Image (tube, rainbow, N blue to C red; front, side):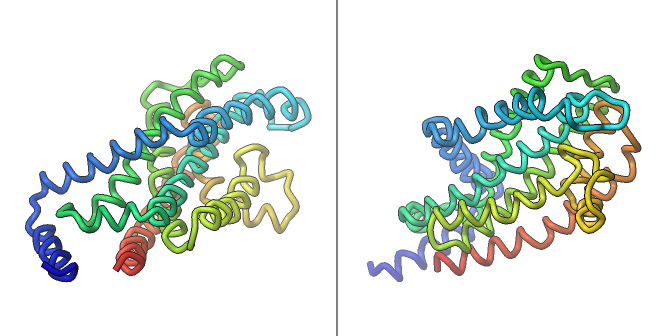
Length: 272
């Protein structure tokens, strides 16, 4: 049978997959990615060691010089660091996809009778799992350096759920960037180019009131500012939680509605 005939057969087999089989394929892809992350020192350092260094740097080097309006800097900082860690963790989605496509792994996957959605869904699900592990580590490190969340447990859980939802949506943005990039090096560079301004021109590390007017105007509508403010309010009671939470959810819904379909289309076009 020719390659065209084989691909046609596999395409028809994919169309007949049940929901259970599709979920199973997604699980296999997610498990593969988790094993890949844990076996690569670069990912371990990026996901688990680097965020701890950020906490120690901001807590003990910059913390004494930053005015946070009546609350300790460590309590102001940790919600922002948690958001930053989740967003940076989402960048591994694009980098991993780009590596797999450059190595021909995705082409081999597409030759198998598996669900077409399994590669992208499994990849983003794996990165969501690593983000959960990272957030647990960040909370433990935060408690060790003096972070003291004082709100009810359900609000703290809601804050972490909001951060994880945010990270999941950013994984789809990162997936699109990784698919559009022609090689892993470009994917890594592009990821930092669009994420760094969002993270550092936000309220993650300093109140926006201390920023220049133009930067402050951008920071106040920046989705990272909104999720950082919501997380901070839910964990330590600093400010109103409802408005930034609702605005964050609105951002998430809009971004998800845009980047899931465009990522799927770009993935199909790139691997056609």
